[in-house]
Length: 383
Image (cartoon, rainbow, N blue to C red; front, side, top):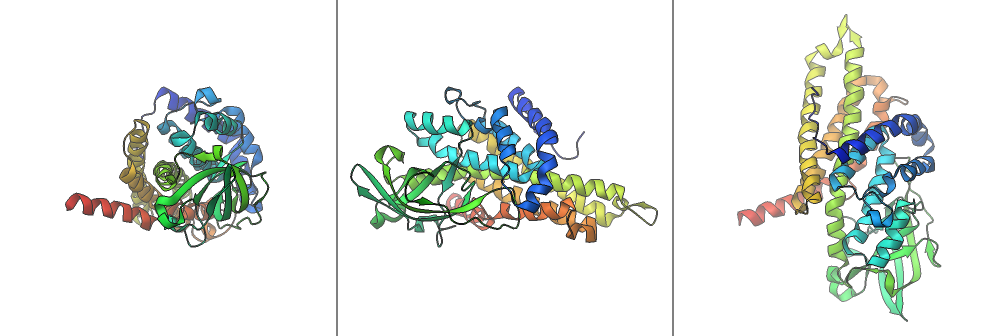
């Protein structure tokens, strides 16, 4: 029996998890250190995701995908992130970019873009701007009527899969006077005139992923509007509700990776004639990590199943993302401590895991934002 709680997967879930485990050992694990040191986007890993069907895991079968349940998608992201956090983050970004189309896309948009996504033409989510991160309603990118379409002007930052994706879901002001109620979502092709990517971030962790900016002075047709005009902020929030659960799954995978290397090192390493895990100063922190991962995994799994069944996950998703990302932080910190001086140096896996983990408490809503969401719900319930 495993110390850390294991979710009971469906037959579908077991199939895809076991497939990922085989692929991870053969294709992903050997590249982890290289991707980190070279900060290189793993096109070979992406091709494996496409060839295996994982790239289109959440995409409908009519568009060439697998139409897997959301909890299965989360199980796969967790397993990928346990072995190669960068590849797990790439699949997480695939899901984030595709979700607006699943929620609000026209049949024609879904056929074109979701079908392309399953074939490796990724879609990225472009909301964040300088001065509009946690307060996303403060975006300044505009979409102004021009002929039978829209002129988009502005700049987006911190785009996951930026540059590697062919398409971008861009949120822009279509009614600046209305603020958050005047934001709409558009699909933008990277190859269009006036679309420029000129900066890639040199990141602390997840260095096998692309994070870029996106400069826009481009025209898009009416049929690129996703969902209703001026309803883009609601679409963004519904997308992030799901996205936070996938980041929670990613966090569990990273936490498990830290726990795995730390517990093995604690058994292997000896001082004063015995394994260091026999010292309570080592076993107690590991016990805390195992407990935190179990609790976070339970709430993440509950949130994933609730979303898959059509339930409201605004609060559950915030709780899962908060708890799982902070459990990963604890696990990574304990892993570095157990490795001691080695844990502070390359090529110790704990050093890389510590860096990979840190963004999980920041992107797709900081821990503070998750607490804000939960706190407002508490106030509303108690009033």
